[in-house]
Image (cartoon, rainbow, N blue to C red):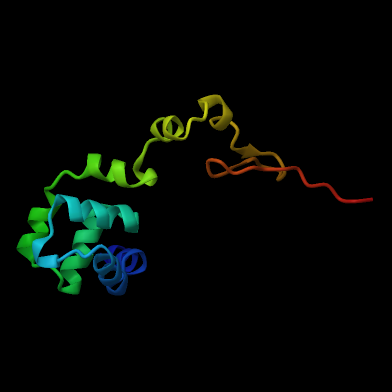
Amino acid sequence: MRDQAFSQEVLIPKEVLFHIAQSHDIKWNALNADSLAKLVADTHVEPKVLVDAAVDSGYVSVEQGADLKCIDIASRVDELSDHALSTEEYLGKIGVERTDWVGKRTTTITPRSIRLPVGYRCRRWSRKR
């Protein structure tokens, strides 16, 4: 429970919720699937975490929060944010071949290879002599 409270406060504090809702002209008492999808797309947090934060902040009631958690917004969030797309969907959207990205995310600079974020360009650095 402490972990959930901490992550919620770090990921989506009350001030961030207020700002994003205000920037999209979202009214908390009239929150629907489309406005919830906009909030999720902008904050990049799961709908459950966002709704819990809205309930804890007093923006929506507990009953309204329970109803919002049952709404399926996945397809709408996919339209609004590239972050919601799978790797294949994202590559198709930007027009890059799978072979150009997938499988080229490890480095051998360190004794143990590490996996880098997608699209990270790694160069081997060498000392000048």
